Amino acid sequence: MTTLIPLFADQLSHGLSALQFADRDHARVLMVEVKEEARSVPHHRTKLIFLFSAMRHFAEELREDGWAVDYVELTDPDNTHSFTTEVERALDRHDVAEIAVTWPGNHRVLEAVRRWEDRFGKRVTISPDDRFVCGIEEFADWAEDRKQLRMEYFYREMRRKTGLLMTADEKPEGGEWNYDKENRKPAKEGMVFPETQRFQPDGITRGVIAMVKAEFPTRFGHADGFFWGVSRADALVSLDNFLTHGLPQFGDYQDAMVTGQDFLFHSLISPYLNAGLLTALEVCQAVEARYKDDDVPINAAEGYIRQIIGWREYVRGIYWMEMPGYEEKNFFGNTLDLPEFYWTGETDMECLRSTIGQTIEHAYAHHIQRLMITGNFALLIGADPHAVHEWYLSVYLDAFEWVELPNTLGMSQYGDGGLLGSKPYAASGAYINRMSDYCGNCRYKVTQRVGEDACPFNSLYWHFVARNEDKLRGNRRMSMVYRNLDRMDGDKRDALLEQADGFIAGLKTVKAEAYL
Ligand SMILES: Cc1cc2nc3c(=O)[nH]c(=O)nc-3n(C[C@H](O)[C@H](O)[C@H](O)COP(=O)(O)OP(=O)(O)OC[C@H]3O[C@@H](n4cnc5c(N)ncnc54)[C@H](O)[C@@H]3O)c2cc1C
Ligand code: SF4
Image (cartoon, rainbow, N blue to C red):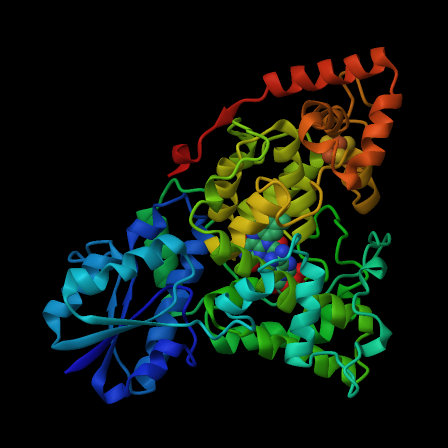
């Protein structure tokens, strides 16, 4: 009798809890490339290539390690393209006593797995995903009875729990918990950025590229020029490259944006972390070691570790605490579909053209581009947060629902009304001008508020503030903004609102389904 161990695309870890459940001589691993998942939203072709290739490499490694693996490729004529029916087919092929699964990264998939026991009449054990620092129940306990959930306090708990950047007497290394105020510098002119770690596609990856091009010929995103790693060995090389060349300046220039520089000092490891090729703790320990060796300053090491044991763990806790239902939240009642240029990159607004352009090319944009360019613009025009969520889930290589949804719907669109962030991330062109060189290359004038050449972000910002007054005026962190609105000359205000109304009315919008 066998234990069937279905593995999902983001469970490519040799230490996965489900793989500890059974002795490899009495187990069969099941891995499936399903169209059900590939077709739920129009996933970028680079993302499909990355995931299918990483899955195939992982299956090979498991086999070399002595595991029996059933691997169902996308083009297998018998593939039913649903995970549940593929489990059913595997049960017909093998004498299965029970099924062992690691907690999936998506609520809908978890619900499907929970129905397997009744459907198949076999015991199904769902074990916790211990690749995270904080358990789901542990987060819920932390959140219980707190009026406000603030990442900073959760993060401090995680520092204490892991001992990362803590002194022997349990104080934060360097005396401060958080060095964020040092991490907001714009890039300097002529600055040299590290080489991005690129990998030559091997035979497996080349096969997957050909398959994805054939199966998804009109799908969003480039399929050529694929350079991402697809195995744990690749991911470790990437991490090492970042630790040596990117980390020392990561902190200082974390929020900077530069035309034509798609990666700056960022690590590009979120796809590897999220697919399971690296673990959060090993990455943070490697960063801490560089700090202890005096290779990197404290603001870089702390800033980086905070992103992982702070933000990454925090959004996961929020996701599982709030699902189901979180995906439907829409605090402002926004209904607009996204502009077509989110899918084509064809716009005169340089900040959006650059960010969306590199997204189409590499399935990558860094945090501030996602938050303050595409996210900010969607918020200002009043885009439906669910449509925004579908876009982010589609277009980024690292997008899995547990991490993407709270970041998009919560942090960026304020769809949850402030559960995740204390005020909306809304900004006019001045912020973008301060943190990037986009405005210098743009046909619009960032200092102008009305008129044909005025930067659209400027009037849209005040339109957002004015139209959501009933929802935001009471927010203490918005009081200065409303004082400025109150002080604004009436004609000036009307002209700004009229300008933004005209701009929004002129947008050509489209639904994500058009790109499936
Ligand atoms: C609207 C929006 C959507 C996002 N969607 C995703 C997503 O689908 N998947 C995803 O992994 N990240 C998402 N993020 C967070 C962040 O943008 C990416 O993790 C980061 O850009 C990945 O690139 P990097 O590896 O070079 O990151 P770096 O800038 O080098 O940061 C280091 C690591 O910190 C972690 N991290 C940083 N910020 C966050 C965060 N807010 N939430 C979770 N982890 C974080 C990531 O694992 C990242 O690899 C989103 C942010 C926003 C504003
Ligand atoms: S001027 Fe406005 S639209 Fe143009 S790049 Fe700057 S912020 Fe973006």
